[in-house]
Image 1 (tube, rainbow, N blue to C red):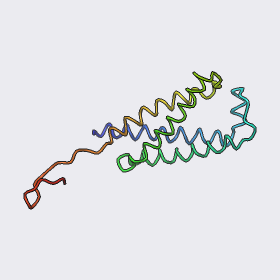
Image 2 (image 1 turned 60 degrees about the vertical axis):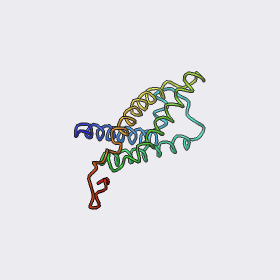
Image 3 (image 1 turned 90 degrees about the vertical axis):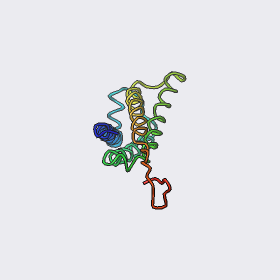
Length: 144
């Protein structure tokens, strides 16, 4: 993998970190305002919004860790993929099958789908590199 690709992967996860952290903070701190702006009825208790908001903040922290050292933190990328796929699935299901997904949630679904594609690309690019083979002291071929 080239150094440019590694920097692109880091940038993707820095962006995802900021995106999820800020989005989580908005829904944690000013959810009532956000719902009013988009003219969406809020749930009957703000805990239904605050818990996922805190999860977004936690994922934002995880994405920051990946961005800092993508090779060492590759094992965390599938969890990010599952987060993004989960949200995209819910939005798609309620948009195309249920037909009652408020518009305020749809841009986040599109953004998460694009990040999911980026995460899958990054995971593949960061895959285990083939090890060079060389003879060891016994004359057998063994990985370095």
